Length: 179
Image 1: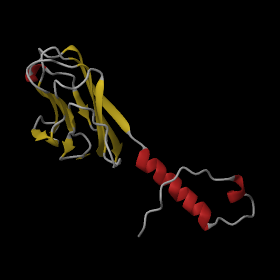
Image 2 (image 1 turned 90 degrees about the vertical axis):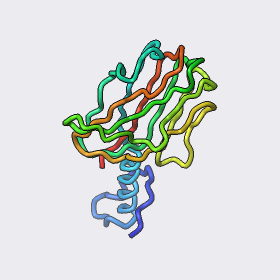
Image 3 (image 1 turned 180 degrees about the vertical axis):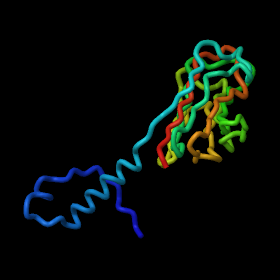
Image 4 (image 1 turned 135 degrees about the vertical axis):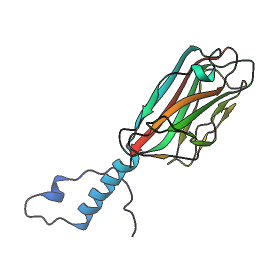
């Protein structure tokens, strides 16, 4: 069975006026519009490490956890650095999948997002699982997801695996939609 191509199309008054039959064209417009919304809807959650986070250790990162309100899938992420560090290697961030009882099921990445000291200040990686390409500036390593689907009440926690001296202002945003 083929999927109707998603398209942002409006239903015209003539399509549904009194005594006109509902045609295949109207059905295709409805299906295309519904698929357009289904494929492009998303919500987001951001973690913010404000100020100089280069002095923060893994155990000190405490910007909370994201609780999955309903079954969901991650459809992308963005990683932004305000002021990049100059020493001690790359900034490496990670997201861990946890259960409500505290069980840590490990990383959700096969390749974790990184920002090398060669990356520019105010630079941003943007990954979109639906896109044919991602935004990947010089010095950034694209994170590759190993897990994108989560169940109601699962937890997602930011972990900082490595930091660079002088780093300031890091933001990691995940984009997700219901499944």
